[in-house]
Image 1 (tube, rainbow, N blue to C red):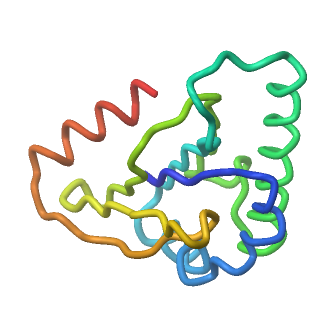
Image 2: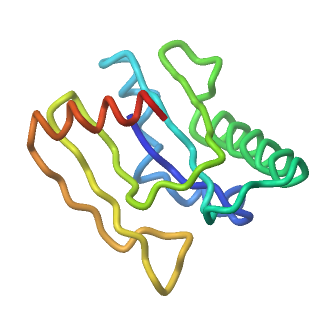
Image 3: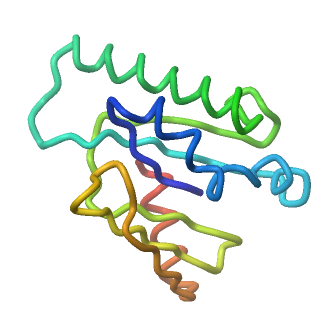
Length: 135
């Protein structure tokens, strides 16, 4: 389970994330399932219909890049991509039902992560998986 963010630069920046997404096709062969929840960097205000439509357009562009560059798309077996028009403060990924990887944004380059930290805590993984599924 991954959380990722989408903004106006995602279509151009996503191909540079080969260290994160480049291994997904091989991972799917061995492990079977990848779920990515895409989140927009939004504030707490309600979105207009035009903003929601623009978010949907950006999500479709991200799906196209994932398909064309990383050979993984929502139609691939074992893959699920969704997006929400909601902001979460901390991005995280869950691996193998045992590890949480927290990603801290880079204050100088908002479209990048500054660092990641891995936490081995089964209870935290379970709680975050429930949170992920609720989103």
